[in-house]
Length: 198
Image (cartoon, rainbow, N blue to C red; front, side, top):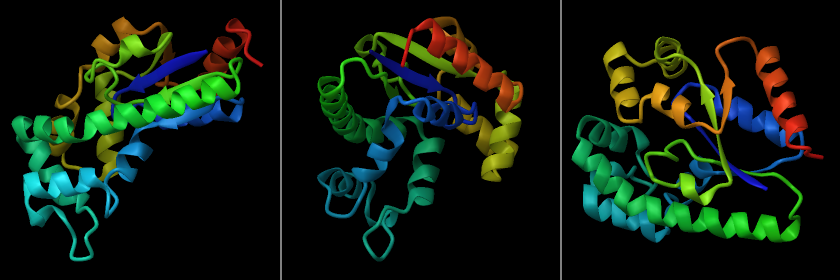
């Protein structure tokens, strides 16, 4: 069985992902793959340098994430250009890993952790979609606190994603992460039991 796991920035998706993994799920993390394709020597990083210029690289050839972030979060058309370079490579690698894991153990839950799952139109690839939810005001305050951003910068990042309320409406499985960790664990236990997972 496979599910797509998504949410919004600072909703606690990584926490839920860890909870699922601790129960035996195999997790494929789109963010990890996104970092791998931005390593020096990878053709995607070369394409990003060509598109955005040498200023998005540190002198040692590694990606300057802060510099690239400033460009893409303040210009929606630049963000779309970046996504056109990175998304196909991420999608392809995720599919390869998903197929590999499902073939190795068809009974194991495989979780594809994808922040921009709906935005990228990937939801049809998964049997069900689990959304990790917190109300937008809480999402904003957590993001400011976590990343040390100004309110304006945090709002920009939230606006770059689909509104969390829309994701909530589209969820097959909803995990409300606005309470404490114990409450989130309880919801994961209910999900695990309802699916008859081992």
